[in-house]
Length: 292
Image 1 (cartoon, helix red, strand yellow):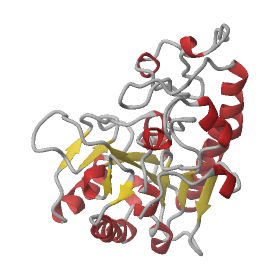
Image 2: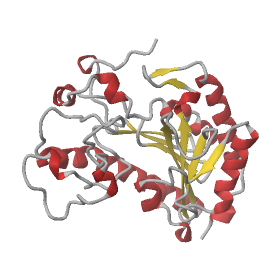
Image 3: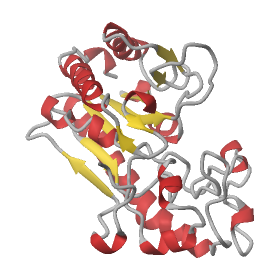
């Protein structure tokens, strides 16, 4: 049985990200999971007013495990170890809610984005259910430390992988991997996967179509860009004219986990096998069309 949360006293703080590389990168692909981190420090838990399981429901739990086979197919896998509710690597570095802090924020902070308004900026004010995360207001220095020590190292690693891949192959396709909670969304029946390419601007349509067709062939229901067209990573790094393509993949959590208890469900093994098939197809594809 999965434990709700490792005790911070039982494990040392990990580095902010992990990169698992193949023996040799043989494909112009990168897989990344910015939201599956599950290390919660004792200090953060003391600041939070929510129990650990409530905090964990903001994670893309186990997505790093779903794509763990990526290096077997010649592609590196980058994962954040810090939790999304602590610092969101799929936001701009300074999307902050002024109401969360005990003093004024610098004028260059983006406090007017829709994500900040929803309480889901770089430092989340609420969890997905709308409950406030913190007991008290934070110092701006705390946000600075999280961006410096967690957000920036993750993005430095991602940018380096993109540069290495484009340098080696002349092109790069980043698969930014996420999970989505079960809730009513546009249309019925609900999608199993949502593919986000910023409405065709972050990724070559042919690449999006290959992922879509492969998943449909495996029996899954797919939707594009609705309700998830891609976050900061998709829009910031996706530059098809420069040979960098980014596709966000959202996977329905009901396929593989117990969302209420944050535990792996029996369907996880079957989903992992299907995602290995997807990765095998992508690894065997001719990606020359992605070149500049």
